[in-house]
Length: 261
Image (cartoon, rainbow, N blue to C red; front, side, top):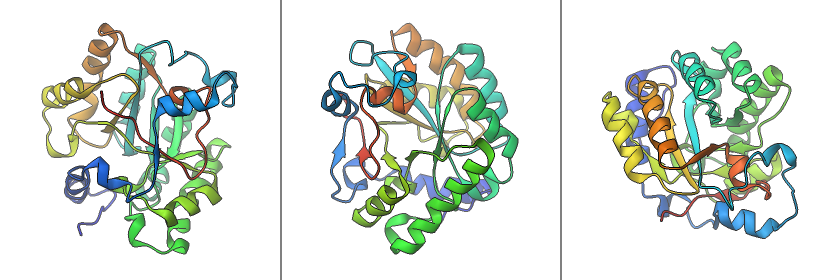
């Protein structure tokens, strides 16, 4: 299996190319998944997530979550400028090695500007290939590094390649981490064509969707402004993943994945 090598753009692209070619129906390895709508319905009117996650009511508003994996990187500050200008919150699933430890001030800025800081493991190892101790190490190292920088441990994680199983779920539960998959992917690891990245996202966008992009590829950040503008024109409201689930709360160990329309 191809391995992800943080900090090496070619190795990253090859591994993620293999990753996103996987069908989402296979990625959870038999683990039950929860949709955002299910999370909201189960919570009812009980605001488990707290008022801070109730900026909008996604049961009444057409919501979509913009998420970025495998950063931060050199282009992340520009991305943050765009998100600030357009007043759009996002969820960042951060890698530890050569990313969190290389761009500590960017991690702090992500948190300070109100985005959700989440965990994408330390070195992008495929968690279903590991025993429980190694899964714990991959996740806990990033948990600790983010807490040191922001004062708060993440409550969300995204397993590399979307691959999870019972062991990963058990360790995630132990560490207080819910697992978040996706329903929209631009395959931005495979092209530097920003117009193509934009079109792929727009073609797949749907209510309660979770968009997967990577702020480490050259074509991605330039595509973001027009993605945001067009989805706003279509009536979408951008939210973080916790906002998408509210009044439900992301439960540790659970796997969240939207259903496509």
